[in-house]
Image 1: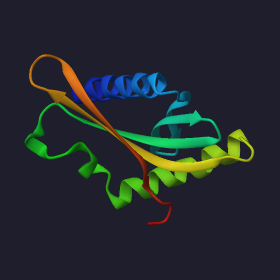
Image 2 (image 1 turned 60 degrees about the horizontal axis):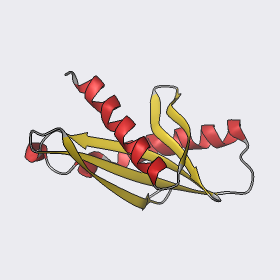
Image 3 (image 1 turned 90 degrees about the vertical axis):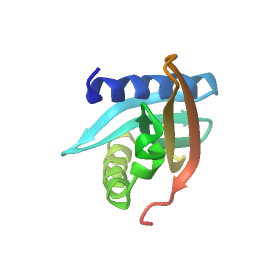
Length: 122
């Protein structure tokens, strides 16, 4: 399976996992210019912009190590655009990250959700 399809599969798994925990998916694969946010989710008064990173093995390190400062800035730019175009009112906004890691060859995955993974501008 190519990396693009694997990435979309991991995003789908992350979205389902979040929904099972009370989050509502507002948007997926939001694009602004050449940048993208994987998921925009809401629970109560909180809207989270979620970066999903996955790995089929631990050979290349933990998935969240790939959420670099540059990637965070790109996500922040898309988030500003999204908020300006969706007028979601008085809400708390934050940036979350979800790691999806394959566990063995069984097809099972481990999912880790980091709430408030970073603060805008850091």
